[in-house]
Image 1: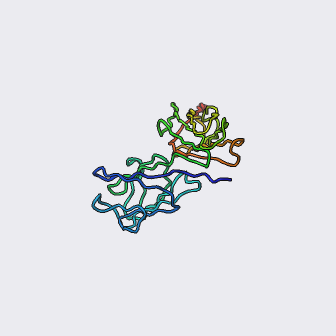
Image 2: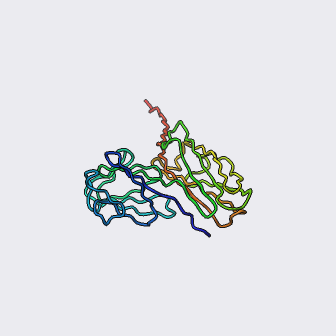
Image 3: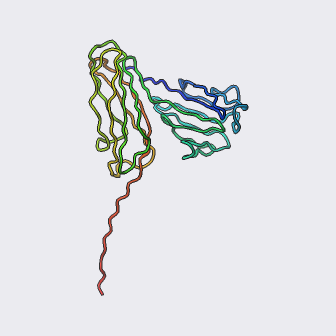
Length: 236
């Protein structure tokens, strides 16, 4: 079986708009001002960077990365909505934004590929409120040579009560198609509130047996409260 691959990268910008893109092919990457790091943040491009500031560790399938804060300073995540304390660790997903000193990191982890299959996942928003739904677009592409390949899609991270998924496409070589994914809050206690990775897996078992490609995005599920009150009249 071919192992799924990803075209993962992180886009780094400084306080003045300088931008550089780094591929995330290694299992472990180090970030800091020391030239021996994999991602070097030069002091002249922004303050608040230690010599060995942070570490990125690829998770299984590279659907996310474990961000480890090696410094004595907090790291802001998602425009300051979350904070990673010194010596702490947390997972970052596709489209997450991390602020290390005066540098901004934007992670792009949304496309998974195998030898013959490409799949990506994009949501219109990242927060799933109780009374609304998220619109997602899954893009599937036939990278192989089999004409009329039938693709099948599977969703991981949510139970069927939470989503509606369009049918998998039939594609000729080089063709791609968007499939809609609708996610709604099922208002059930089975899936807890908070960040949750949602993964789409694309396969074409007849055309490309043993191959699969996956893409993941994390959404934030709003809490759902349901209380019942029972009044009992006491005897006079």
